[in-house]
Image: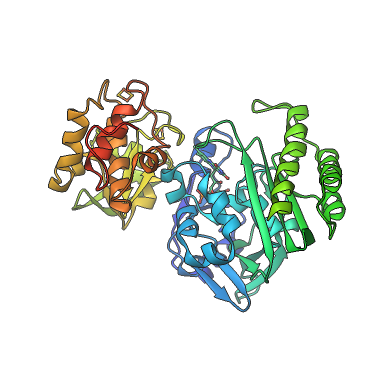
Length: 289
Length: 162
Ligand SMILES: Cc1cc2nc3c(=O)[nH]c(=O)nc-3n(C[C@H](O)[C@H](O)[C@H](O)COP(=O)(O)OP(=O)(O)OC[C@H]3O[C@@H](n4cnc5c(N)ncnc54)[C@H](O)[C@@H]3O)c2cc1C
Ligand code: FES
Ligand code: FES
């Protein structure tokens, strides 16, 4: 087993940032639904300090803040699902919450944990990517608490790897309030409705006018080392009227843009077929919307 | 030796202290430190729901929770529910509907059902099925479990087919 030397449960963001600044040897604990099985299964070694962040009020809550919705890193999947703000402005997140694990896990799992765990199949990541979400990172480099923002699309660098520095804490996610005619949908393909890791997932968003999506955003999960934006698919989709030929062409670009692997859940070939067929189905729905 | 930490929390309505290993799960703490073995170990990784408990009124998999995180919280296990008159109807329904066979899933199933009914008192068969998605049963085929829960939900009709 690991030799944990210290357990801390700071009650402010400032204190937490101070622990991180003092030592790079800190493992952050939120809901624990990734950390516990990963540490017990020997896939992750808890560092010298285990820091429980559950008592930090600045990391909680979902609120409108300067033209954006800020979701605190500690917001659980259940809290997001029940939030009136999210239901009203960001219903695509509700779609992602709905098929997330089970009730027990949704009650514990936090959004910050999902983002920092950086699984290519993390359910919240694809919808957040098509919503142009930004991560808010807090640290205390020289005595004062500072925050920086980074587009989520630049945050992931590999399975389980992000651009978060060891001295930083994810404080929250920011999503600009969607304008009129905003359209955003998410689809997770799995073999059963609950407790399933996505075989593939797709998010599509943009401003819908006259059957065409502009500022089109497309993202895919579980088909690359990171949850990915798909710039070529977005370009093929941008402001084009979604007739049958365009939809087929865009779905073809999508299939060619992803680079999945074979694993226990599906072969690379099958994943590419799923990306093609489900992109097509989702665009049919956009055309009918 | 792994680092230990002292926690103070409410367990089935009673305040108590415990000294727990920092990397220990709440499930191990309940069974091995507190001596409450009603909460079961099925998979140890969040898949089966046998270890379901209520923490601050929400159902959680105790195998995924760090014991140290129980500090300051209100924890209820199946032993707590057994002493709670409000849960009598639910427990009786499991017995009457034959929703218990080997019984291994039962504590977790009853804890999850009580959380479901507390948050969705009108749950119909569909909502009940979704509510117990995180609980596996290898014996009953679920039908009798869904019927048992439906019989105590406000919209449930005893014996209603799912
Ligand atoms: C049975 C089971 C089913 C699951 N099903 C799904 C599913 O359907 N979809 C899905 O997407 N995921 C699923 N998961 C994975 C997991 O539940 C989610 O990733 C969850 O959101 C993690 O959140 P947490 O709060 O539990 O994170 P934790 O386990 O506490 O932390 C996860 C990681 O993030 C780090 N971290 C957490 N918060 C912060 C922060 N604020 N700043 C910096 N670092 C931080 C931790 O150090 C750790 O490395 C499942 C897990 C299990 C066990
Ligand atoms: S033992 Fe906790 S979910 Fe199976
Ligand atoms: S009664 Fe045996 S597992 Fe459910």
